Image 1 (cartoon, rainbow, N blue to C red):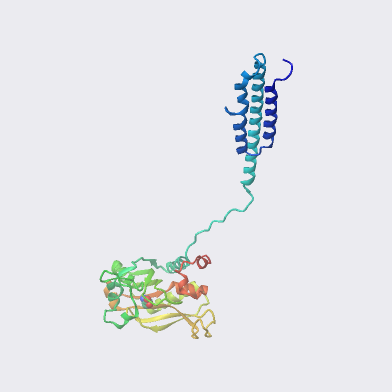
Image 2: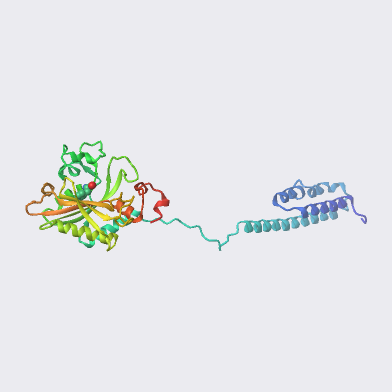
Length: 347
Ligand code: PHE
């Protein structure tokens, strides 16, 4: 057979068409449909094998061979194209998802101690240097410890000073000050001498404003022993003020009334803002109150298990939030427990 069989011409045309189409293919979806069209069982090349009987018997082997050849060529080209597309996809992905290791990392936010944790620790440290040890007492207290044993009987007008959170359990309240810790410490240590700081949260049912919160810290100071005098108290508190606010701070103690001390007083520090001249921060007084104090009342000593004829003591109660407000010029007490990170992260 010299001239080309019609089937062979058809195959050549098919091959040319397939190759041209393949050349233009850019993605794997198109590639898969190209494969279905030209190389699957039902594909065009395959149909030539079925059509072999159309050709003269002596031409059939040559046509069959040629069809096989076309099929193999197309398969090879398919594979080449397939790996080229895979490579291109991979390159594109690498390009798109490339990590730039020179970019700055994402900053993680660091936790920190609350401003009052820091200030409280500073207060503990100062008093620890003077021999006072931290003594923890509960925030949920008995009415008896919080009032009765501190010489504040139910009918006592001083009882009105504290607006109290009562619990559903009769006689159990949220402590309104840290002073009930005095009774607990005395009852634990009597008749040994005592030097403790009693820190922690107190609660009062109050109208909240810039200087009143329903919860706040106090640090109570208690010293009980023989021959403890008002002079010891004054010296201790003045030393505290110096260590807290600096050597040059000026202080004064003026008389005041608390039922559980006698005599009682309040300690002021000279106003930082005006230096004692009087301004809006100190209300024109030139002084800022930082604590209440006094000699432990004989009734309270007795309630704690000490004979007031033999023992004496002093107590003080300071407000650490107050101390921070003065030191950092914080003008609203609600900042402390409002959980606003913008405030908290400044310390
Ligand atoms: N407990 C008093 C208050 O909450 C403060 C105080 C403590 C006063 C100890 C005198 C002695 O205001």
